[in-house]
Amino acid sequence: MGTAFYHLLEWNKRFDRAKYGWPGGPLHDPTVTAYLLSPQLFTGRTVRVDIECLSPLTAGASVIDWWSVTGKPANALVLRNIDAEGYFHLIFGRLLRL
Image (cartoon, rainbow, N blue to C red; front, side):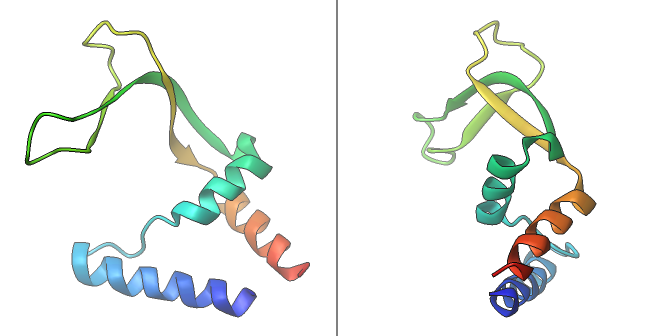
């Protein structure tokens, strides 16, 4: 399992470097699992989130009202920061137990 996770990290790193010029990218599925196991690793806030349905160019895009400019009530917790060291400690610690 650890080998599979390593290859996932490597693939993401190569993909994001080639496409976006980033040194690495998000790992959505393991990050959701990490949140469920250790939500204290994450910070964010509850804000308004809507899904764009009218524009053919942005249909399906999440629109986050981070600064409450719409006046609509908050409806989602949006996480923006993660304790990266704690995250990798959690994930690799769990993988080593398999």
